[in-house]
Image 1 (cartoon, rainbow, N blue to C red):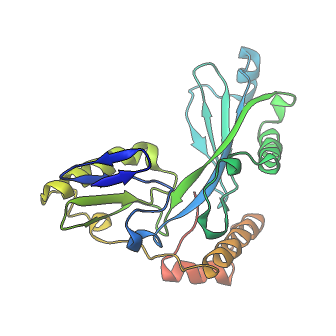
Image 2: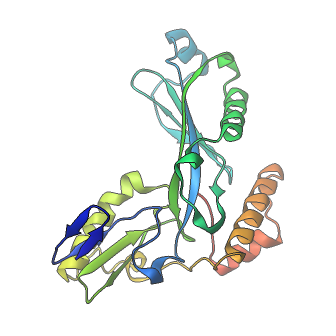
Length: 238
């Protein structure tokens, strides 16, 4: 039985897909942290503006920095520009007020015009943010509980638009108790390393964010902290 503030649901099998919110299975809660990612959307570009930046085939792309930006062109020729900041709030707080962060929007706008100086003066019509379920290996992990009657998937780390369909199929296999090609994958059988509890978690994430920013400013050269995380198989991002 699943109990919510608005009612109860009886089911023989349950698939848990809580994304960035704390897992309903307590032992899973150290495996993910909610980090906030932000994006801007421009007004529609004119044909002349679009031609000026040479974006002919409408590919989506991103840069190769640690704190990377991702870029997409909409059907009405708006540019979606997001990424860079990955913000974690102490104790993993997920709140509606965190969805708006003017200082991050200003930083993204500055980076946008540095990348596309031909578009100086273009307006941004939309700005938003949201929480992402981040784990230490940047790909989803899976588990079952309650004698296989509850399946769990989380930790998509910002790559869930394409991967959640696969994750749902894995959960269905697990709930059916079937041994399939999907359930035999190492990423399904093994979990990532957990994050430490607070306050070490918060301090570690802040140290990692600072180190990633310094690496981007230093031709990608990683400091001792990042090299240690690499050796331990620990990552952080969105």
